[in-house]
Length: 324
Image 1 (tube, rainbow, N blue to C red):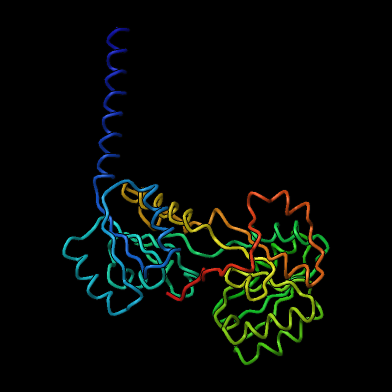
Image 2 (cartoon, rainbow, N blue to C red):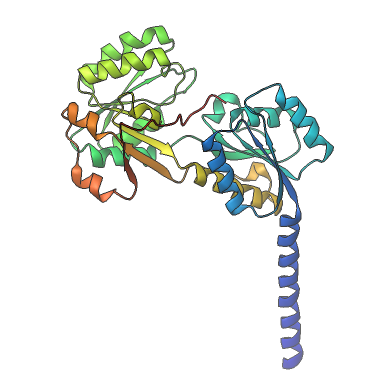
């Protein structure tokens, strides 16, 4: 009896191993389509992250920033329907969402997906480009220990409410002073209204607030009033920002790869929550900080030396947040 039980147990374990191996090989035997909005270095980083996690077959398409190109690519994909689609960038994601209603879609490298109704749907999930305030505010507290008030300019029609940011800021000893800017024409008066009541200006990726024309005014007023500007793109360090928090694009691709693996192994996109950015990069412009006479915690900068990049004004940073 004991021998028979042992044989039966071994057989069950053996069958489980075979089942798991077949299941896994079946998942990796499937094929996905990867669609990029255009050929940008940051998108290439995300695709490299996808490839580092997803080891199965895939076809790659590039819209080249051209909406008209999406029709040709959609027709090409429909000839050989993939088991899932990963989109990289807004244009690719919108094209996939509009044309593939039943194919599982994993999006990545999209800023504020809720604004475009991208994150809703039974066949879609993904990794937004947004950096969480729960990751950035603690670093602000370390680097600017004496700062008490953070100013934010935002368009409620695009960014929505900033209540989450307010709560996170409060938990780290900051008061958040938020000023609504429904129109870019209202920005100068909005900034003048709060500039004497804030210690930091937190520039979030709001397309009403952040325009080529408004940035010149923002950085000029901030410099005149010794207000450090904290923002989301390394490119803005050369314009006068003191500190930036940007996503690690390779890690965004890795998360997208993990999501598609789950889908190919039987999970439904609707059951896989949107995943936040897990790794962020911090860059600081000490030249501007010194000119403004800012009080910066040098010990914190040293402690974060493996996670923080000292910006070199002699180098031109690339744009981290494309429109498409």
